[in-house]
Length: 129
Image (cartoon, rainbow, N blue to C red; front, side, top):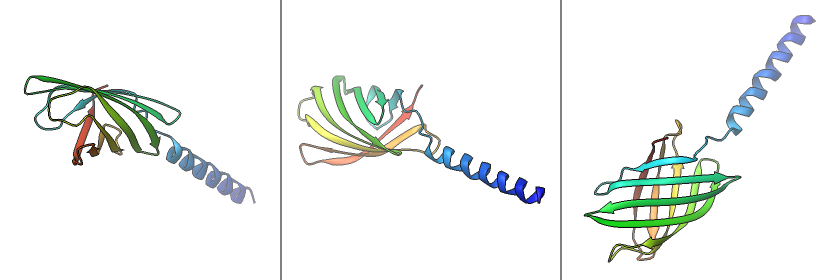
């Protein structure tokens, strides 16, 4: 009887720990590198609180500075936000959306952008700290 009780308690402990680890969110707050081709000095700062995401992005392209910021939400490991460009590059879009998925190791955000010029493509950010 004692062995059955111990087995039962072990199973409860095992499944409760498994459920906890599946519900635990990876912290995305911090500084990320924009590793997309053609950009230089490109950094992203992400702040998340209770599922609300605030995004800031600076990059240089062929010596021109570009800044955008946005607000959105996080659902699980998916982040979606709308951006407004505050320092544009001539010919580039001035608004858009990013939809990103956090990698299993928590060090890469990868997904797509769509902009107000009806363009879309891949984007990737790597965690710096």
